[in-house]
Image (cartoon, rainbow, N blue to C red; front, side, top):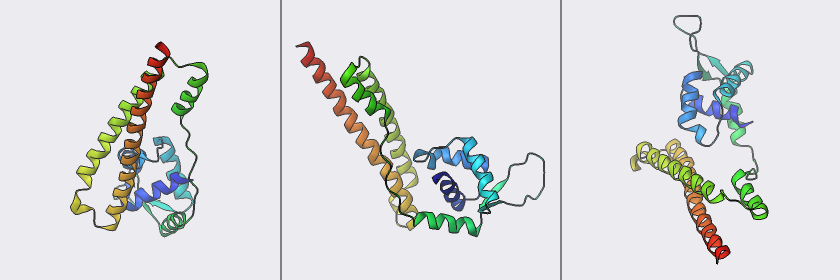
Length: 184
């Protein structure tokens, strides 16, 4: 149920067209709540039907023109109620961890390469997050509450990527040791 809340959040930050919203998802919210463009457009229709958002009136009505949406009071109330609702953390689902568990019983010839590939991906993501942090959150922008909260979300992403980089580095090292032990 979080996609509608992600959309409401983004639209409260800045009224947007569906296309602008999908681009913003690709550059920010999508880092921690991914969604396809089709899902976003479908959800915009549901939110509009529920009376949580509306398309802003256009100065020049035209067929096929992009609609820009804004959040209505009912949408703001829905988002505020959701923010105040308790939710338990979801269990981690990782195909990589499951693959490693399976490799313990059937062997895994390509496991090290897969771990190295994941390590490279996490390093790239960490670099991207650090670039966003230096660009969007210089020290002078970290004092206002909205910016502090957004920065905390980004810091969570940075810390998660650092965890994966550290853990994958250790796992690759241990696989190397296991290989040496089985060869000796």
